[in-house]
Structure formats: structure tokens, C-alpha cells
Length: 269
Ligand code: ADP
Ligand code: MG
Image (cartoon, rainbow, N blue to C red; front, side, top):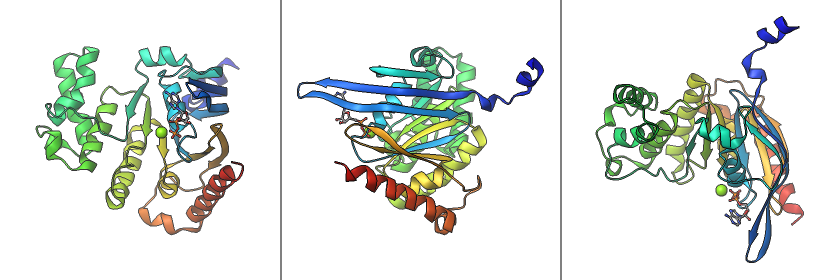
């Protein structure tokens, strides 16, 4: 029995386990039920997208995982720890819609910043920064300043910064929401390759159905007032996904189910 357990793949341990999660914000206009009874398990190496209209609690859920909000009910563990312990153990890197790079720091200076804060030795920090900049194909831009880079490149730099300290989990909140569609397509392909190479467990928030379907191993459809999960869709798509896969019957079937889920969530407003 013990022998069997020892041979179990690590993938069996959930990275995120949310059970009956509730979060009510107290506001001047009364309580806002941002999350209601959210139950979800995310396993190691999964790519899970959260899709739903504004205000359905996507950001709130990510913030709970990151211990930036405290749920008002239910249970949540991250890497088998409380979210707060996981935060202190640097369990995740966070990428936001705005790249949030400091204009007075070079790209490598920006990517190095979390490592400086964590007190990494200089040589190791330098090596890590070089490695993650290569990973996002910005190796040649290390000495440039953010304003010298396109929006898409800035967002890649912000992904590199989130990867620099090798957290297990990548939390991405509409990272490509402000970019045009062509750039977004390209970054979607790159992100998929990056995910494949690094095996990071990724939680990804988006408004875009094609983006969610293209990237994810699982898609969580949410609905607002109260914020809740209305559908969880397991993707039948292979891991290898050229952009053309978006015209395949499997892809279109999943996209259709997401769209139906979003529509149903709106029906009871
Ligand atoms: P999403 O990311 O899906 O757009 P959010 O998680 O940001 O949704 O918000 C969920 C709900 O909680 C919304 O109604 C929003 O107005 C409300 N909300 C979010 N953050 C706060 C806060 N800090 N204080 C009060 N209400 C908030
Ligand atoms: Mg949001």
C-alpha cells in the first residue's frame, strides 16, 4: 500500500482545492456576493481558464488563491497549504492585464526585481533573468526600457517576471485583454509552448471564448450575481495545438458549449 502511494505520480495531489468557497464584500451599498459555493480542484500541470462576464468573481477567485482576499466561507488550499502559507512560500507568479513594468528599469531590471526583493544572490539572479527572458524570446531586449517594446513584448516581460522565481503556479488575469487580436494569437501560441515546456499549473482569466478554448485543458464558466461556477468543461483537444485547430469540429463544439454556458448564466438575471 505504502509502496503504491510512493509510486503515485505527484500530479495526483491537487494544487488548488476550493470547497464551497464564499466571498461577500461589504460595501456602502450593501453586501456584494462575489463568490458563492465555488468548488473546484486544479491538479498539477493543468491549464484552467475562467470565463464569464464582468463581475462574476474571476479576479476575486484568483485573489483568494493569492491570499489577497480572505473568503468569508468554505475551504481553500494551495499546494496543500493555506493560501497565506503558499504566498509566503512563493507558490505563484501573478500576471495582470497591464504589464506593470517600471519605466525607469530596463527589461532585465524589471524581471530581476522580485528576485532582488527575495534576496537572491546576484549571480543566481542574473542567470535566472537570462533564462526566463530566453524562455519568452526577449533575450535580445534585456537592456531595453519598457517604452522601447511593443505592448505584446511588454506583456511577455511581465510573464518572464512571474516565472523568474520558479513558482509552481501561474495566475494570469486577462493578460492579453488589452492587445489586438493578431498579437494575442501569437502570444497564445507562445504561452501554450511555455506551459508545455515549464509544466506550470496555470489559472487564466479571459473574456475571449477562442482564447479560453485554445489554451485550456479545462474551462470554468462563471456567472455573476452571485459569482458562481455554472459549467466546467474538460477539453478534448490534444496538447499539440496549431492555431488552425480553432477550425476543427472538437474546438467548435467546446466553444459552442462555453457560449451556451455564458448565455444560460445571463438568462436568470
Ligand atoms: P470579474 O473579475 O469576474 O470581473 P471581480 O472578482 O472583480 O469580477 O468582482 C466580483 C464582484 O465583486 C463584482 O460585483 C465587483 O463589483 C465586486 N468587487 C470586487 N472587488 C471588490 C472590492 N474590493 N470591494 C467591493 N466589491 C468588490
Ligand atoms: Mg476581473
